[in-house]
Length: 170
Image 1 (cartoon, one colour):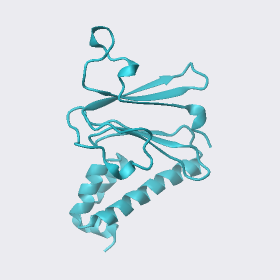
Image 2 (spheres, helix red, strand yellow; image 1 turned 60 degrees about the vertical axis):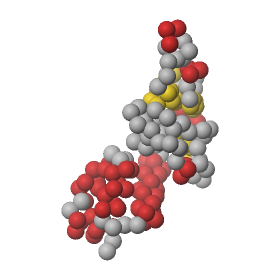
Image 3 (cartoon, helix red, strand yellow; image 1 turned 120 degrees about the vertical axis):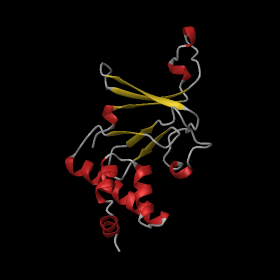
Image 4 (cartoon, one colour; image 1 turned 180 degrees about the vertical axis):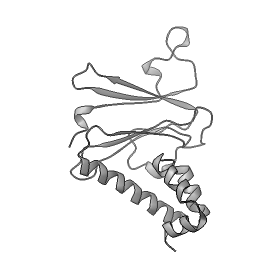
């Protein structure tokens, strides 16, 4: 049976479509496992969905695409750049209440800098007055900051990366 047939027969097509629309990877994996797909097949399905997203970006000529994601219980900043494209960044911050014992290795080849596996939260700063406009993605831990009264300051970030909107164009 195909993946779609398995989803239809199990009555999970709508649940799958909703999770796909929300980019809820853990739920997608759970649904695909529930219809008896092996992990390797799940990875192939998710890779095909990623390719659909890339195709949409390319066919619409969308500039400035920058992804925010979560629900993996660690933080990281990744960069991919398909041939003839601008860089595609994905900023993941996830783990304000839970964390993993380590950063997953699946993105090692595309990770910018180090990941952070402890309790964290993400913070985006967009400087619309800068020329070119900048987007700064930062991850902070759950500790007091080094600023006055324990406030967090930029230097307290566990991960910090800045990109310009000029960089995100075909």
